[in-house]
Length: 97
Image (tube, rainbow, N blue to C red):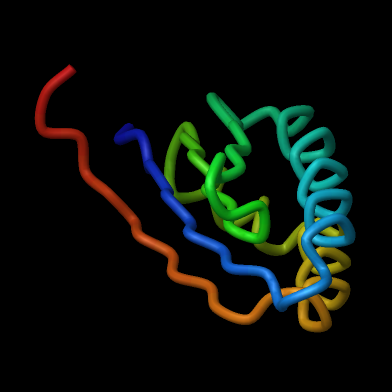
């Protein structure tokens, strides 16, 4: 089994930082409760409050697929459409630790 690491860079729409933060915090709490979630950490830019970084690690591809199909993730995607201006997601392989 190979750990799947995700880094997501999110830029909220102007004036929606607080709403996006709330949606992301709720998503994080539900995601961390998933059996396949190893790490799920939300960061907020100190300089730009509308910018967020998610760092996630999943047990394997199946665990990530379950997360993406979960009701709480789908609810986040529906809600976030209003709040997110840009979303860049990177799937990463670990080279060293």
